[in-house]
Length: 65
Image: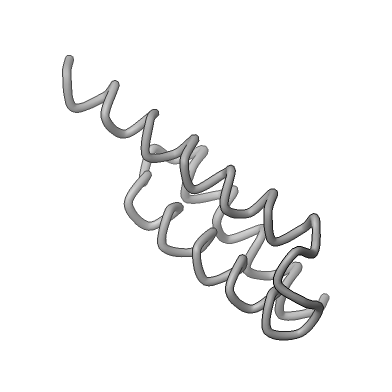
């Protein structure tokens, strides 16, 4: 398993467990790592940053309850 695969799995696990702050941190790191290795506009990096937005939204919805 590559480091990028491990970060993706760790972020997904944190998200599933409701640890949205950690998931956002991991997805952000994943996006930055992908950009550094594969270019700024690599679709996988853009996907990681979209996931950051999603977990932030989920976290804010949880905080409202």
